[in-house]
Amino acid sequence: MLNFTLHTPTRIVFGKGELARAGEIVKEFGSKALIVTGKSSTKRTGVLDRTIQSLVNAGVDYITFDRVEPNPRAETVDEAARVAREENCDVVIGLGGGSSMDAAKAIATVALSGHPIHEYIRGNKTGLWKERLPIMDALPIITIPTLAATGSEANGGAVITNWETKEKAGINGPALFPKVAILDPELTYTVPSHYTADGAVDMFTHLYEGYVTGDEHANVQDEITEALMRNAVQFAKTAIDHPTNYESRAHLLWTSTLALVGLTNAGRGGSYPVHAMEHTLSAYYDISHGRGLAILVPAYFRLVVLKDRPHRLARLGRNVFHVTQADDTEAAKATIEALIRWFQEIGTYDTLKNIGIKKEDLLPMAQETVRVGGLGQGTLASTHPLSVDEVLAIYEAVYE
Ligand code: NZQ
Ligand code: ZN
Image (cartoon, rainbow, N blue to C red):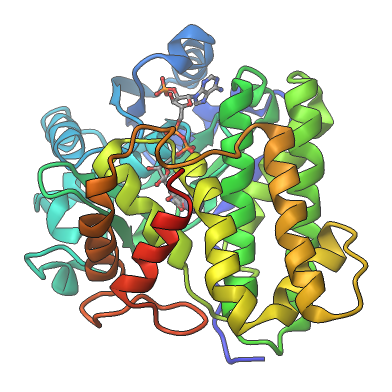
């Protein structure tokens, strides 16, 4: 096992009805909150009103910024940060999916520093991210997820898109860890089946990427990862079939949080090549993050992991999908087939062409993936460093 430091400072408040405690919790950290949320879902479901009511009951002043788009954009973050400064907000609430929570983290940063957020985006052309990251100061952040997917609720990262330059990548730092995450699974009852499925694929990807690319001597982490993957697979299906089944939603939400809180990759390391490849897709085409991941993984497994580390894919299949083949390569192939069957079952099996991506963009996107995701190394970290040609081959393999 590799040496590691694991610091997960976010207090987690989990359970039915816990949203009602938002006001009393926020009051510990500030007196005027900026509520950062998306354009429609939290209004439609009444969750925004319930959050506001809780703040009012606790005597916390607030204003609402309700213009966060899926795949949140740098200009939106900068605009909201201006509002936070003008209104003297001293605490930021991220209410919604990963996009609202990520935007809240970025806004909490810019509201203090005054630097535009694009300067922080890892791998951006200006190179300023090398000075700006890690982020050490930000307003206190409270997260209230309404969708089980990203794990943003309890980690120190966020993903922001600079739409003009088509750069989508992470920002990170100790100041981005939320002070408190309020995980109320009932808030996810209204998530439509396609986003429930995309979210399950996202958490599953956070789990397998470190598992197949990281150090192979971290059995505790591997077994925790396998257990979380089994839960993602099982409860995605039951949550889709029974959207208001509390246990399904609770297990999915808790799995998504644990999948990216740092626990599984501590002592194992690893890289996120499929995430880097997807982030370019959603930077160019504004697609759902989880759907992009689902499209890419069969080709990534076939073209890269099956060759480099078939035994890891075999282990994944045996412990998550009941694969029984004794030979590792055969078991690895069966794992890929089992994964595709799961995607078909939950409705995420798709192609790049089908979601509107143009063939002529594959090469520029492969180049961008290696440039932004490769942080100037000229290759993308994986089980071996991937070249532009190898990334392009993956995009082409899932094109149609
Ligand atoms: O936009 P609104 O009106 O809020 O509606 C959202 C959005 O349309 C809707 N939604 C959310 N909760 C709902 C709901 N609809 C009905 N009922 C509810 N309870 O769902 C749609 C998708 O929301 P979004 O926040 O965009 O999805 P997700 O949670 O998948 O977040 C995706 C973003 O997170 C980034 C992704 O790249 C993407 O930008 N990621 C963040 C990570 C992190 N911070 O650690 C890691 C991830 O790998 C990921 O990259
Ligand atoms: Zn993800």
